[in-house]
Image (cartoon, rainbow, N blue to C red; front, side):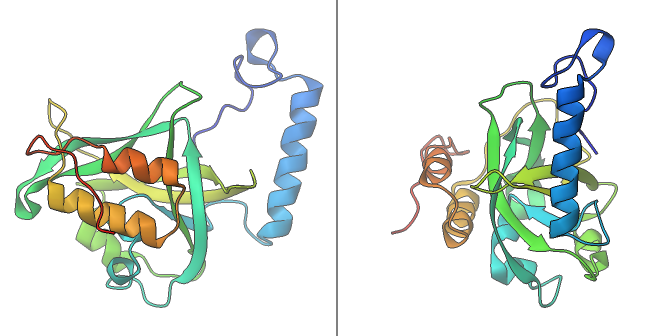
Length: 202
């Protein structure tokens, strides 16, 4: 799980990466709140979708009866398209960790408890094409959720652009999941492989 606990640049961090008492108390308080929300588990109880898996019809092909969750943001990450996938004729998205506090990726979480992800992992070719990554997301109210997602294991030497039809589908999925308009606007303005901007269907 990626975190900044105890790092010198974490909130309240002191010399040599030692967290201050105030920071430690804040972390304990948050973990207690998480434990109340998710009894019996503190790790990876939600699945975070940031790509076409946000779409109900798509996720349902691989995992049955996924419970509805909510739109969430993943802070200190950005979306990028580092791998071109010929069978789909488009570059595929993944997540990249950054140090910029303004970077974030919006997506959707599903309750992953007692769900079988084997069929989805076969489709994603885990761990060769994708691998599982633990992270922590936040809802609009700032509540944090332990989650996991799948990110690309491979990348090309250059950054790619997604196909227009891929972006149209991604925008439709994000719209379906009611992510903030700011994120939808960013997706609509994303430069595509044919050099144009993609507008979502109204």
